[in-house]
Image 1 (cartoon, helix red, strand yellow):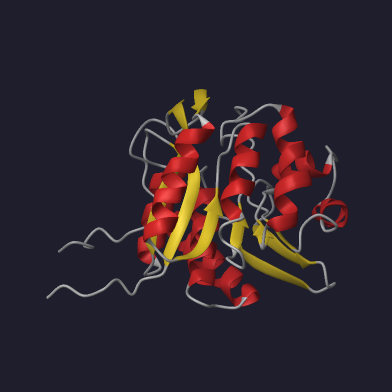
Image 2 (tube, one colour):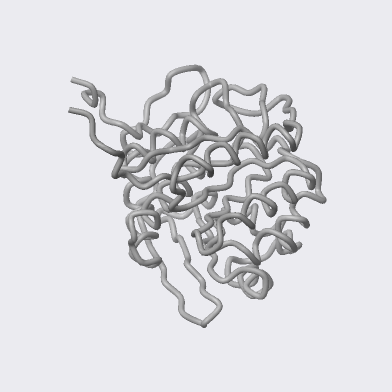
Length: 265
């Protein structure tokens, strides 16, 4: 028996990863796992494997606007997740899209570097994200290297980067997966002065798509109505489990297992 869709819809504006480890496919899988429906709008095409990005092409803004407008006209958007944008023009395109979604939570994953270190946009993209996108975001989820780029503090600590970025962004989750301590410290900062620290065991190996998984899961939890600190904890816990159970499908990094293998059985 067919029923009307009761799953919250999350609009995902991100790049396509042909290896299937990151980008929109990561968003789709993570959101299915939260009981949400992903509406993937492609912002960029990439040439990449499970190690690094060798090339990318940002789509024409009219194509991106057309995709998003078609979805918004048809589906009730409960949250928006941003991934790879790749150009200043795409930052402005997202702002135009958000004008038609007042009050909808926006999770901004400032994708500036691939896991292997390859750039996913010119330096001015980070500046445009900080100046234009962070002020309209509910929360941004940079890892520490991305936070250092956004804050223009190449050697800054998480606390120093947060102090620089909170005037732009209401809430900031700086993840600690790029360190080398035995424990990973993920820090949630809010403009009202509240802070939360979430600690988990560091897992061996390197992972392709962990940041996408975290941000899309967080968007899903907000779409389900969870309050922010609880949604962050839920997203971090889920992401850690996907990394614990990760697989190595190719010659590169491990890919998070976002769905159980018996999902369709």
